[in-house]
Image (cartoon, rainbow, N blue to C red; front, side):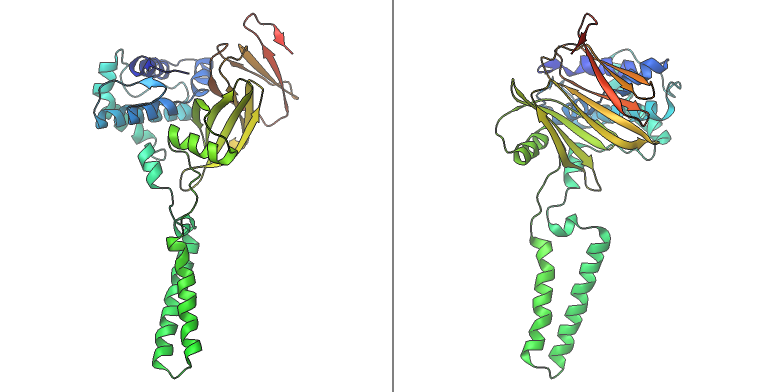
Length: 324
């Protein structure tokens, strides 16, 4: 876990990686990692993963957004040269971040950056808010119809029973407006842990790492030396909603998103703190191979984009020996 690591150092390392990519191998390695924790650390000022510098809220927002647009640029345009100048220091990045964000966002209009607060504000608090727009319109129209029916009944000579029926239906239709809906969305480190604890019914635990790739968000949670969970949140119209979890004693957990990248599958590998591996090799039935390289012992979440196929996993230690 990156407790106490200086945010400026990690930020500059990541920024320089994104700025200087020139080969497909460098691009693949850059895109295999997520900036979500770093972005949330910039926003929150009290991340458990990084110690934060003295920045105002606008500087924090621009620096976090720059990570977002830089990643999207590389995902969209690959090794193509950036339309902005190279930087060398955190001071330069901080100074130029608003301009860089504007330039890159003009190329990437569909990928707007959303802060944790913006994600939180989009989460429904009632069943009405959780409905689709079509169902919301249908419910409102139903209420209007029965209000008009009630007014017509009052003016006409129908008995009391028929006058009360529209009232009862209107009251039932109002229930979704006041009935709270369960919040299973992860928009920051705290909410991710809270939802995981509620869904998996455990107390305590340590959030080792978290990442966002494409339409999914992941968290690595350790309960003890023998029990580890990788939780998955899938993006919907409101935010990232809890979808599933993988648990067990293994030090690596996998998740797969099918057809998220032009018919290809995305494999997510979560490595827990203390693992002995330096690499996991995925070998497909068609002979395609992808190597996921990591630092032994370091908790990290990696992404690999693979052709649609069935894969076998091979694990290697630091010396390059296969671990059975």
